Image (cartoon, rainbow, N blue to C red; front, side):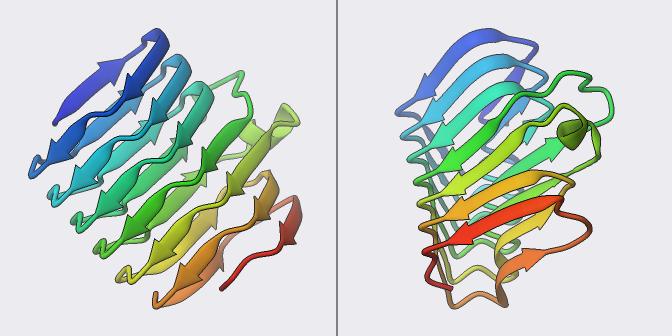
Length: 168
């Protein structure tokens, strides 16, 4: 790992380079986390992996050429009180997986939380530009997704979606 963060509170992770690690940045069950302006390139797995975090903002990161997804957010059953998740203005290209992948279970929607995916540029990834496989209320807008296997891949059940002003 470039950085491994577990059960932290009120963190800002900004302006770091995570290059050529097993996994760039891993953040597990942390609260009030802002991840911005990081460069995650050529890691063997994900550039950024976020697992069951509360009050999460992940924005303006660059994740290129990673062996997995550029950015992965995974919500688990253990998270009894998830909050809104915001993934915005990230640039994810040339990753072996998807540019951004969002996965998880129904605890997210049971609390009425919103998944915001806005203003991202995900192009030339081996799989999807953005893959969403979570039960969620989704606001998906102003994303640019090009030259991927699928631009937007929404699997499983999205409860309610607002998909606006994207270039797919």
